[in-house]
Length: 116
Image: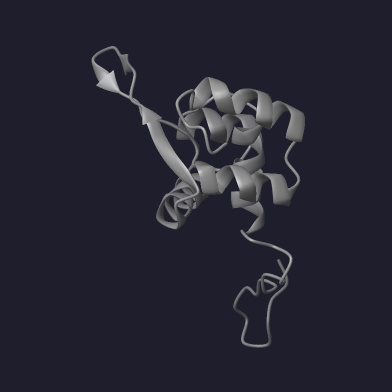
């Protein structure tokens, strides 16, 4: 990442065509093209760092793009599993996710939702 004159790292601003930053876009497109995943399995799949992926998930949750689907138990611990909300589905389509896979997966995740 380039440095500014003050020595601090500088990130380019989000353009008018981007809805989310690049890491959040990678998470969004990964979830759109796969089944629901935990934060850790998403981090492994996109080859990211744990802290940055964890923060990106928090930002996506705050924006209402991703939601917790279920919390399966494994060795008496709950691991939340995340997938896209209805708003997240439309943003993923705009951001370039595979349309066919996303539209086939959506009725499996939200079988009762007729809006999608």
